[in-house]
Length: 310
Image 1: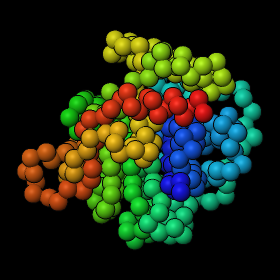
Image 2: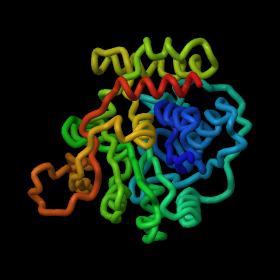
Image 3: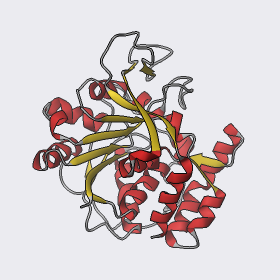
Image 4: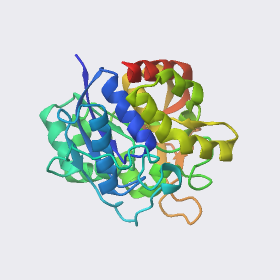
């Protein structure tokens, strides 16, 4: 039986690839997708999500529900320099969208679906954690009803990608991350930059996808992304941040994890959004999440390419 998941996205380039992997793998029952402000505005993230489902020809089956339009306490902070003004690197610019979002509010949708299917739903979060924080605040028992939460965010050993220490999703809404970290989820997994930076989509991978609508989309959407990564890191590739979170939902064997205590900084002029991982148990706190520390990138790409070519 396929595993039940809800994706929570701020659909930019890598969220879109994560959605594609989730749909095309055939291994999930994708109950729905909730959208959140992050890489782009809530409206743009929702439109992009609908466009991707149209491209995959599954728009009728999968509801898309709008969530939070801004962080819990902070002003919005977009990432147009990476994802482009439209969030998809211009790949679907001008393409008419037929899929429309469903009525409702993302956090309420998460609560309703998890309550309806207790112990069965995995939440895969690839944007700021605002929607999940709002859901937990409204329904604290959610933490006992959800099967698992896997989120892309943070960095525990390496440098950040927005500030020297902060990863983007955590930086945008650290207060939401703090709510989630301390909510008491029995199974919470952090898929951070320490592992996602090791999973690099390159031109050879893109060629393997072939001259298909999906292959052409991936090539076009990642073109500028590859160039910007090359300019900053000297490698013509792009990190598969969000698809790896979906990959972890597909198979835990892709990553090496350790149960550790992680908190997040919310009151620092220099270090806001930093995920602080207590490797040496100096804080004497119970571990609160599984932290991904290594990844089998080759195994991930075997799954990713096979799925997108299916």
